[in-house]
Length: 167
Image (cartoon, rainbow, N blue to C red; front, top):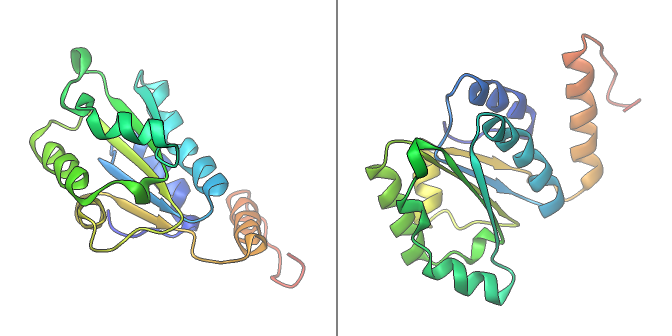
């Protein structure tokens, strides 16, 4: 699972429903849009009894708490744990290496949903996601372009079409 366009999110949702779950999803772009799209996927996991843990690394106290956790090394009775990380660009390289290493050792009981306005391609979690996860960039600067794409995809899934000028 390498880089996906926002238009391919329904495919990622379908894969999650079939238990084909990436260990790392990186959403790059405006937080409110990325968060909404991430929720569409992790909700599928929650329906399968996964536990959700949220950290906002833009908050100093939460960032401090996050830097100390080792919770991703534990899993309760084989239950999947989902981490939603806001401000993921604030994950240190060292912490990224630690997480990537643990993902390589564990039996797919953890999924990370990282949301950031930008993410360094040299970061260990970006490299890991490029190889074994999913990277979903919302690269357009204009929110209207993202909404237009959403509208076109919704119409397409309903078997309808709309020319670009009308959209």
